[in-house]
Image 1 (cartoon, helix red, strand yellow):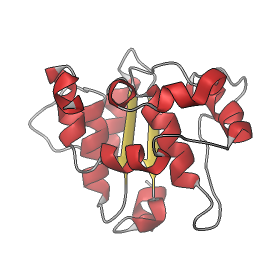
Image 2 (cartoon, one colour):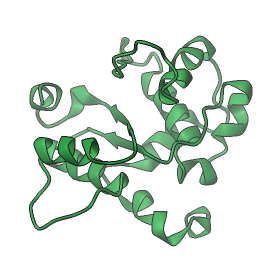
Image 3 (tube, helix red, strand yellow):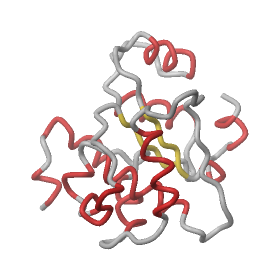
Image 4 (tube, helix red, strand yellow):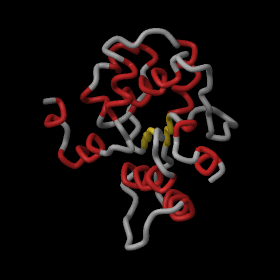
Length: 168
């Protein structure tokens, strides 16, 4: 039912298997708890408020430590679509990030680099052309865009070729 409450132009995100919004929503559960210190560090990054920042942040930890739950909470709270269909914003209280219109979130599990790139381009609503998306085209399109996007990539180690994705 929540899917149909979302603006029709944004429903594609909910159907995108690479974005996998269900992954993000289920990692946080109905009541996300904990990780307040990490949220306080990452929310300003999402908003582009971290002075002198390179723009890249890596969330790392042992299996089962809550990396995907943390990313799920951030994505569900900040994404213009997921924030309307998940209750996560309410559970974050003062730690909730602002809604970020230029936010792309992809889950790399069993995905190829070209699938990840195409999903990011689609989510950012970058102008399509007859050519397939590749890293260079994506970077050029983002550079010529008026928006500075936030891109969240979860489960890099589970991609079809993690080395290719991380060395792009």
